[in-house]
Image 1: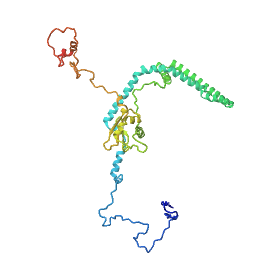
Image 2: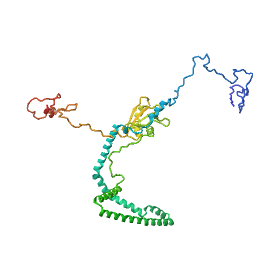
Image 3: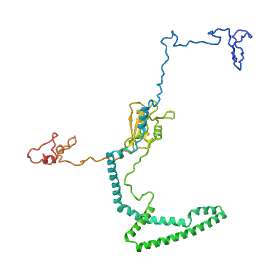
Image 4: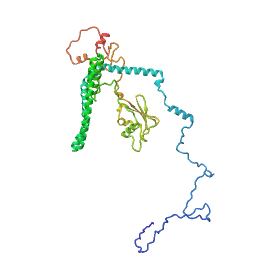
Length: 407
């Protein structure tokens, strides 16, 4: 219901208002009126409207046509059996790797294996008498103490001590008596086993000392000392050194790349990156190609280079960015396995050696003339006696001693 109130103009008498609204009842259900047979077809009834639409069959609608679809047609893959078989051939993994099938690669792998393991064996062979043996001899007393401590704790049932103390603290006499009887039975049985093992070990040691040859006795002593030394070695200082340096190397995943872009501020919850191709190995690193969100460019990624490296948990010198010409928001990353600046470079052959005498300086600036400086300062030294004229530089300074010798 709609009601409009009108105000009476000044000067008009009261009671002359005209009604400007009416109350109209709204039906709760729509009534369907039957079609009037007397109304001819094509006549517009009250409350209806009619619009003319262009029809291609209409001869007057010349020049009008339906617009072409904006989206390209959806391709159905595979379009043919030949392409399907070709895709399957490309995706199939080889049975044997290339280094097994190719003779030159087999030779290279064999040479590398011989060179690598011979170097490892030589590394440990040199350190066995000089480093490993003193360490074993130093750690063996500690290993014997640890071994005896473990055996003593096992014989006297030290693992049940906490339960017995808890029952005493709770004043539970029944539980304490039960645990005490169990402890006495265990100690009695384990003491018998330890005593028998001790007598057997002592008898074996005396037999070995009396009857065994010297090489077997030395082997037994070395084995026992090595075992005790390994048992007594500290956990933070390994007994055997590594023959190679282990670099920090991790497998790169899509979650790490997405986390790096979120930390760098290149993505948000609504817009994230896309991977147009899978993450794969590329030499001594990983190759990742990503599509940044719309509106982000390669320059934005370059500005956040340090934050991207921090998000991937690597050094900034391990992350390299390349621009992809196919799209302004596509960026190619190469993540090195280790810092290239931390790898020592190879020394150039012949560096630091001179092929012959060098009579002249290699610097682009001339050497300062000390004689001229002394003359300008008024030195009282007497000039040398006149002699044969010597070659001089264009700067007026005498040549160095090597030039006068070889000149």
